[in-house]
Image 1 (cartoon, chains in turn red, purple):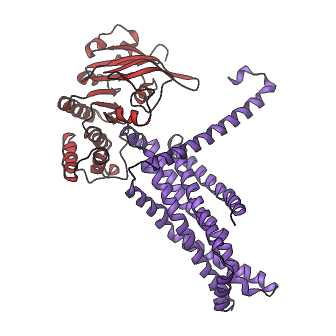
Image 2 (image 1 turned 180 degrees about the horizontal axis):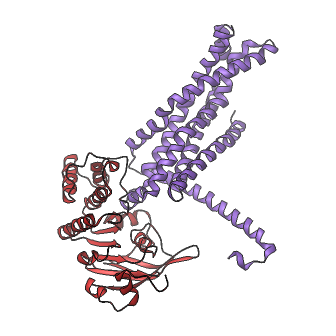
Length: 245
Length: 264
């Protein structure tokens, strides 16, 4: 389980996170929603150890990670897979080499095993045969799927998705969501996803948390969130502007 | 403390203080970046393939520009020094004058400046683009050190390639001087090379060698640092690239003076 307590972060005078409390149960897909610029990606970057909070704690299976450095933090990251918003594929490598990279660098596996697992990972995201292409030669949706394949090829316990469907058409959004749910059923990883895709996310989430003005405004099952009486949540789901906006 | 809390006459002092602390902070980050690279360098694994790629990128791909600038620098030196020496009837010293100018000063400095313009700027841009497209973050969250893949191979490649390129620059420059002094202006071949062998000492060669190694470290350190600490978007990459070239060039000249005054 990931347990976040009182997470605060400011950039200069701008307070982005004002005391975030959230629990992500093991094996679930938890999706964080909220307005653009509301700190969702900043929150995610704290979970993956790319930012340090001003105060507050993040515990991964009981281990507090916000003060970890170097190898201790790397040991936690070994359990992670991360899909970045733009894919973050290494543009000097082919898609196949991108997927193979964490295997070659982190796992002691033979070249044949790497090739087999790369082909399998690409097949799982519906991209069998694109291994020889470079990221610049494929579409945005394909790049995101290659990024998912790269994040999952090492079979991580926890996978973070930073807006994996941003900028894609509705068909591709559903395709990516299907890939994520299929892989989740197969590997049973814990997933934390930041997304704007309402109402599509309600079909794949086990839990939904809404981040609003630096705090978790509501958290619950998709049904609970959709039935929420919290006006901030209700307005956001209906796509209506805030009163403060 | 916010600027608004100080009275107007004190605000210039606050601005100066903020500038000084900002500068010290930058210097601290710059030093820490290098210290982290050194600490990573002494722990395995060593990324040999990345190192070879960088040697190719920084060294091999700079050969043409080094040969061209080396040749013309030697030719200009040959021409100018010949006419200066001829006023004193000392044309015989053209060879050593060209060689010493190149080996002690111009070879290391000009080849470092050329490589900064060609490879250093590209290094900053490449790492900067990797930073803004989250490729460096991707390495970090894979529990892989970006320093190990991007910085250390570049610095080591700088240490290896800069002396080699300086040596090439020197040799080509000396033959450029020969072309002008001997083939065009009529000095004898024996005089040009004979006096050079007499007057150029090992100390001179080692001075150029140590300078070129130092420049290799400075240029790759500055250029990778600027790439790692790039601002936002394309404009941030452009600014970082410009800063990397300007700062590297200034440091080359400043460091050249210090080393020139310390080394024999």
